[in-house]
Structures are given as structure tokens and as C-alpha cells.
Picture (cartoon, one colour):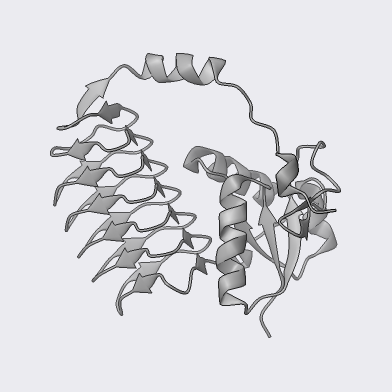
Length: 233
């Protein structure tokens, strides 16, 4: 029997993951857990927010998928859940029914593949990887744990994407290029050469920018609350 499922964080990605699960329709969905007290007790797209992460203890039989948008945050949550007794074997992958995964490809536990994602041949994804709609990974690509590939990302053959790297919408990476751990590739960037770990590249062709600028922007970015339209009565 398929275990019921709890989604960790009531985020935008969680809502997209919920839609993929409903499109498949083969799993009982228990709800979200989220440490934000402002969302506890609400319903998001018809599914209840059960409370903080500790509420997973009430559902020891449940499978789990972590739905934070940034890979570094997903990894911190996984560490937290480990301390709460959530073992690695409780994580499940979510594949939208329209995702295409060729025989011989590997998708790690806890990974999320949304609508129209394509893995062509010999592709290997680590744990907790997120591929948003219409990502295309071609032969022999390797995507390490907790990397995030935003909508429309295209990888040539033999690309390697490092742990918790983030590739923005519409980015393209030439064959046999390496994107380093926790690197950021900007929206629409065309990557023609290796991207060092923890660096940021933007543009066509992609060039490095100062990560201090990213941090400054993040520091002043507004926090977007859960919108009332996401609640049900």
C-alpha cells in the first residue's frame, strides 16, 4: 500500500508539487507542515497546514517531500528533519505524469519533476533536486543533491550541476560544462564555460558578477505573505 504524504513548507513550490500529485492521483495527501505560525490551521489549495515540522511525529507512517524553493534551504530542512527522526527512506520523489524519464535514468529520493520535464538518456539526479516545468536534461547529465533547475532550463550532454546550485528560468548550459556547488546562473543566461562554486553568472554569454550584490538585494527584498486567494473557506 502506498504511504500517505506530507509536504514540508507551504510554499509556492509546494503548491506546484501538490498539483503534480493530484494530476497523478495515486497517493493520499495529509497536508503541509510549516514552521510559520501564521499559516498553521489554514488550508492551501484545499489541503490543511498541520503545524510546525514537529507535527510529523503525529504521522510516523507518512512519506515526506521537502518543497522549499532554494536548495540550500532544502538541505537545512533535511538536517532538521533528521534530528526529528525522519529517516532518508521516508523521502519520495514526485514526478508529474507528463514528465519523461528514459530507461536508465536515475532520480534521487525527494526530488520533484514538474510538468514537461525531460530526461533523455543516462541522466542522474541526486536527492532533493527540483526541476520546474519544461526543463530538458540531455544524455549523461549529472545533477547533484538539492540543485534547483527553474522553468525552461536546458542542459547539453555531459553537464554536471553541483550540490544546491540554482539555475534561473530559461538558462542554457553548453555540453560538458560544470556548474559548481551553490553557484547561481541568472535567468536566460547562456553558460559556455565552467561556473565556479558559490559564484553568480548572468548574461549571454554568461559572465561572473559580485555575489555581494546578490546578498544586498536579498537583504532588502520584501517578504511576500501567503495570499488570501490561496486559502479555502
